[in-house]
Picture 1 (cartoon, rainbow, N blue to C red):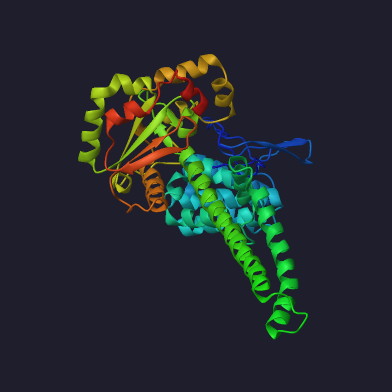
Picture 2: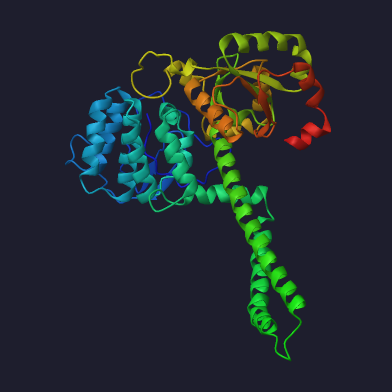
Length: 443
């Protein structure tokens, strides 16, 4: 289950989540001068907190927002979701400070997500984003919100966050724009010239119109009518073109922000490797070129069978097959007790957390991960994968639900896509080997 969302991290395309603890969770508000607030699978932050030197459990204290949050987390760990929800609601009614309110709202949203109450979960997260500075990256990173991210309510929330506004806050849009500026560094310069030249043309037109009127009246000292009309037409035409370019650039920026948002969602989708280790797609960057095969079960199975003929050459090019079967995400699943993945699966999750980030930076850890990557991976949370693919189809003008393939670059971005299943022989010719210079530049 999610512990409170109180981190101040920027949206990033790297893993920034913490490994789930399998032992009994510590109280959310330990009595110490420096309060350590643990955010489920996200960064931690330190907040100054004044407390008594005497250690007391939440059960022995008077009921406060702090004690209710702690008790709610304890109930979470025991799978008592309904009782935990009551505790978080009680915490919100006890005049909590901003940290406590953010914690209660975020964990309350996770309760609703677990119960399949998407609208209520979205309302809680929307309030936390708007009033308590919750980072949208936290919602994207949290595996326990995977079921919520597959719902239409999450798509609406993400779109609101991308556009920004008083109802959702501007932090997510600001982070997206920073990434957009890196990818298109001259957009601001272009806009400056659009505005400057439009202003110059407007000033020129301001002085040209009286001259044109004078020329039409035909006085003795009137300027040449044809020449004055040509100047006015040039100025008007220039203003129209420059304004059109300005709005076109704005439209392209919005499309780019939407694509960056989809790329961020894609980077957080989970996969199960052949060794049963679960990783997020972002952790495979610079290591493989995932090829997503989405379609009917028979079609995808046939495509994988054909790919076996080129297995050696595809492996040389870092290809990892990721089959997604339409409708698989809607199959009923057994209800789990508590939150998150089962303990055995959680133990196989060195991919999540700062601890993994440190190991992944070492040559040994990266070599180990490479050794675990085989020719094919299995998707986790298929409904979330299917939702992302359908969004991608809409953005490219493809009817959602058609059989498609999507080839990703080594840096995790979409290389190209197409209808139907891929021509493996063509892909072998198109993709350079991993040791080639082009592949190194792609990273």
